[in-house]
Amino acid sequence: MKNALNWFELPAGNFERAKKFYEDIFNYKMFVLDLGSNFKMGFLPFEEKSIGGAVVWNEGFYKPGATEGPLVYLNGNPDLIIILNHVETAGGKIIIPKRQVSPQFGYMAVFIDSEGNRVALHSNS
Image 1 (cartoon, rainbow, N blue to C red):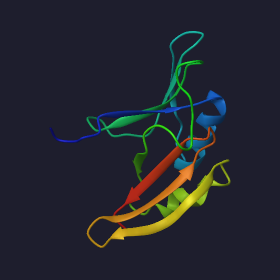
Image 2 (tube, rainbow, N blue to C red):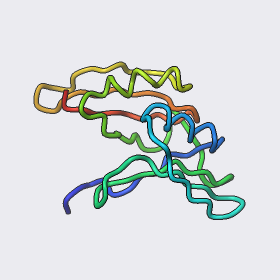
Image 3 (cartoon, rainbow, N blue to C red):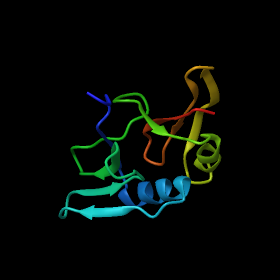
Image 4 (tube, rainbow, N blue to C red):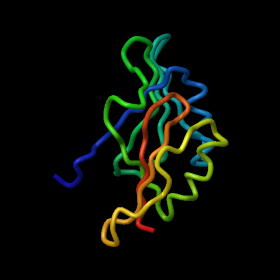
């Protein structure tokens, strides 16, 4: 096994709001897959043949939350502060500012996204 993480999904209560939030913080135009009247998926930035994830909306199945569910670490390289600086203006809230995990393991931060999900960032510097 190369990576423990293969795919992740971030729940959205309001898909358009979540899409705008992630487009704003990553300065990225999201590709959206509309799978019918009750399911939408917006792909987050990723490189071909790498780990990816999406913002997903399906009323009744996906539920955003700040204290439950997995804590996903998104790639914040080269420096997570670049992304973190956009979080609050995009509608999120920083709950753990950038701090060093250790000299060996780099830096991390945690924020609440526009949908109330707790999400982390990691970078080497």
